[in-house]
Image (cartoon, rainbow, N blue to C red; front, side, top):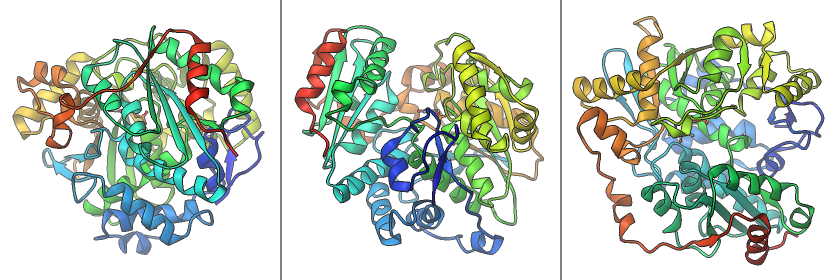
Length: 466
Ligand SMILES: *Cc1c(COP(=O)(O)O)cnc(C)c1O
């Protein structure tokens, strides 16, 4: 498969190239030149496969020829062997229509593990082949940092430097990062806010003194390989609920639009998807864009579902590209306008293309609490605040009662014990596999909120690229 940029100004790359590059050089995001498509018979033949075998079938068209089928199977076997559930992403039932897809059985209890556990191994595989070295630099306010660290800890040829704002992440979140002891993991507590840490990371990506010596990379959800890995569980869930003979709808707690875009890719590949419901909290730029065509960023309101507290959804650009006729130069102009003014209107083609598959809903704090307590009291299922927003949207969407609706459970409830306890009266315990978090020793550097100090620290501890 060849990959092209959504902004039409970067050269096409193969799968290995897009995995290591992340963002395209023209500021766009990479997408496959065309969507591979499975016939109904091919989808029916996927029923009953193990998660790993299903992953190989679904992803093979995207990774050829950079990976052989055996390479891919080996990487998936190792990545998904770390999950605490044999089914990797098991499905449970709420009621006659509503289902829950549990994506939190990975090592850090968030759905990001599904993609990052594979991405860490892809990095290692390709870097060995090229005899090169990668320096991952990121800033985190919580979840992504721990999933990324776990995914690359101990991997050869990769160093990770994760900045967190000192004293401003929860104890559980900090310990999930700082108790991972591996020589290639470097946690840094920065004086200042998350935005200060993020600004330093951005500066490092354009600092010639750093990029000249190190191959600096990110692990955020603009990386195509992450999206690709998420397509698999849409197939897994739909097959269990009767696909391809029966259509299935999905409700997705959404922030950066990566997870729900993977559902769009599944539909493009032939999976019969009835609807994709984009669930947002009060930070509802996507709900406004999908319902009125107005994509304009406001200020972020902190909520009990912090991974959805966003102003701008980077992966939305991929949908606008695909629905808007795949005109990279026109989209580049539209996105430059958005970057300058923080507002834009969707074109008619973009609106109509999106409306064919997507609906959206917004949940405020009360709706989220009601969904959590309905799940606990009526169905005996304890869910986290992000998942609750998805469930609220799923029940409001007015989907035909004959169509199953699957809400994606993006985090384990034990990651957000206070919010869950407030809504349900029950405090969810941490699963035993992370239960000794508070006994383990922490390790991290403390640095002032000063770019030069951070750059010097990275330069001292990273390995130069070939
Ligand atoms: C990252 C995250 C989301 C948002 O996913 P996107 O792919 O960014 O839309 C939702 N819920 C949880 C728990 C997350 O960690």
